[in-house]
Image (cartoon, rainbow, N blue to C red; front, side):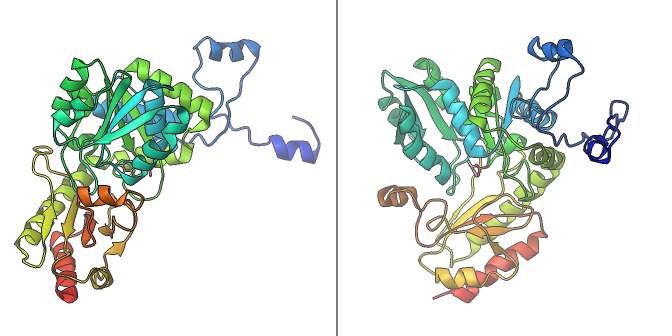
Length: 380
Ligand SMILES: *Cc1c(COP(=O)(O)O)cnc(C)c1O
């Protein structure tokens, strides 16, 4: 080290961390990794050393990708900067200019925008069809179709995808499949084990679990994940080490959160089905023997003033996202599904009185009371 103050102050952080065994993985908050000599540097390119530059790879982001791959029963996974960037690099690993993607109409609003408005600029055509009838999927397959894209539980009306049927159809026509498993999480559903090629997550939701990060994860076959990884590196949609670390911390409590979320959601759906001032309750029945997830949507168009309802929710907050430990509500018509064409909104059932409830982990009775009360106060 140089002897002068201004040199020393730059170089003093020289703690050797090799022999420190911290209980949890430290945050490798670094943009690059150092090398002792040129041979050491060459080791990276020979595959004998893991890390060079954080956009190319980082221990925290690798830990997240690998953790979700293992929970999904897939050989490999990568973490990305957001759920949407994971979807983008997954699609780009499969489809190129001139190819066609067949996607379900009832997908997350942000995904719809990516598929409908951005992929076309990459030369990739997308058509949206109703996945409730596999004949409709089959009738829309073209000679240049490469990929079938859908979600395991859809948003906001909670349709449960028949994954086995989609996989069988894809195999018949030699197509790839990709499923967004954000709402179900690997706790309830593992599409890779049903034969899906790529499974994608917005880790922003249940994997992180505490509404304090934005991240995405993509898992699947080694060869596809390698391709997607080179897209991440070259486009620059890598995840920050700190957000990866937070997501890994969240995953440790995924089981206990999902168990409680599902139990509370089931109880709320049961209670609201008994309430004669609710037109419709959307909550699935066949996701898993462990539960059916944490999202309940209700339609109160016929009985309540929707503005009054949102004003009457006491401690339940209005938030345009989902999956936090706190119960929250969102209004699909004005947020997630705002960009959808009117006909698609009508076809999907995104009405003026549709409320999406992200059920938290609080006391079950308190949650039910909050909604019963808001319905009572907002009745016409
Ligand atoms: C939130 C969400 C996304 C997008 O994820 P971001 O992390 O916001 O980019 C994609 N799919 C589903 C089902 C989601 O809920």
